[in-house]
Length: 268
Image 1 (cartoon, helix red, strand yellow):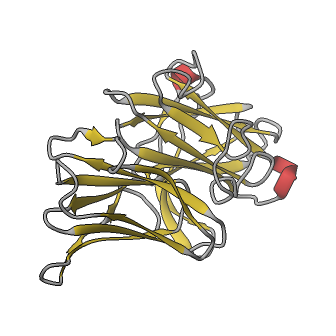
Image 2: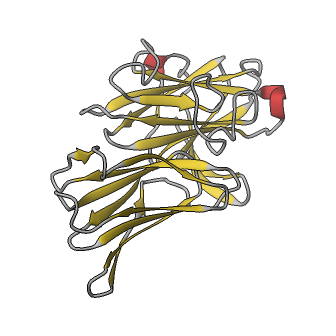
C-alpha cells in the first residue's frame, strides 16, 4: 500500500511524498511517478529501483533524486534515464534528450550538474521532441547494501515556461534573470498560433547564456516577421531562472506585458 505524507527537504521546503511499491526492481515493475513535482520515496530494498513517467512532447522535464541521509559518498546515488522496457538510453533515437549531471555527454552548465553521481543527489534533464508522448524509465542505483533502509526520494517536474509573443506592431522582449550563483542557459522557442515551432533564424534562439546572478535579453524587432505572433516556450537548463516577457510599440510608446507561467511542479 502506498502512503502519502509531508517530508522536509533542503531548507524548510515541504513536499508531498508517496512510498514506492516494494517490487519496483525492474523496468517492467516500475513505480509510476506522475510528473507533477510530487516526490516518491523508496528504501533501497534492491540495488536498482525503477520509476516510470509519461512525458509530453514539446516539454522539458527535470528529474531530481535526493538521499535523505545526506551522508555524502557513504551511500551515494546514481541515476540512469532509459526508455520504456529498458531497451535503450532515453534520447538515443528521435532527437529526444536525456542527460544527468556528471554524464560524459553532459555539456550543460554547472547549475544542472550541481548534483552529480556519487553525492547525495542527482539532477537530470529530459525532453521529448517527437510528435508523440514517451514513457521515461528512471533507474536509481544506491551504493548502500540492499535492504538496509537507506531512503531516497524521486520527483519529475515540468520545467517549461509558457508565454505569448507578438511583433504586430511591437518590438518583442524576453528578459532572463539568473537568481543562482551558477551560470546557466535557456532555449527560447517561438510557435505560431497553430502550434508549429518556428525554428528558423530570427525566431527561436538556443543556448541563451545567463551568467551567475546576471541577466540577458532577447529582442525581436517589429514588423519584420511573418507570422508575427503566437505562443512562446522557454526551456531553462537549470533552476532559478526568472522570466519577463513584454512588447513595446515604439510609435505610441506603449508596453504590453505577457504572463510567463511555469509548468506543473516547477520550482521558482
